Image 1: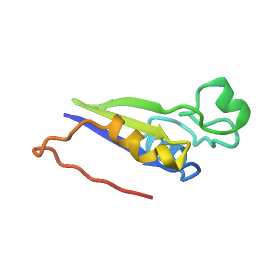
Image 2: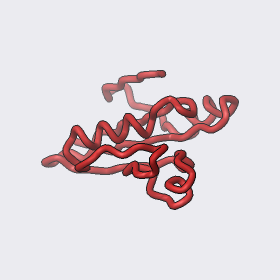
Image 3: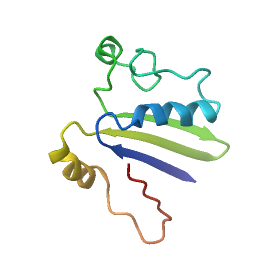
Image 4: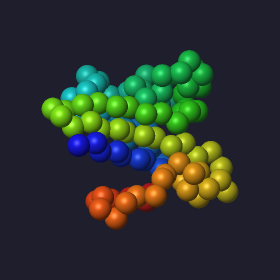
Length: 104
């Protein structure tokens, strides 16, 4: 089975922090990083580590048994573009799939 978790939220809503928790509690990373400390797992680009902010949207893929999980952080810098980014980044979901949406 393939499972995709998409994390969409405004700037400074905790997307990367939440992602770190998911990866840590799943046993995929050994220690929790912090965006502002420049040591978060998801912020792997040099500019992100130097500035202590998430600059790029990121994806983590991991497998458990025969299941594949995709953890996707979609960064939205401007509130005006938030809704359009969501609609562009998410394909239509077939009615046969179970979905959950959490908005912050």
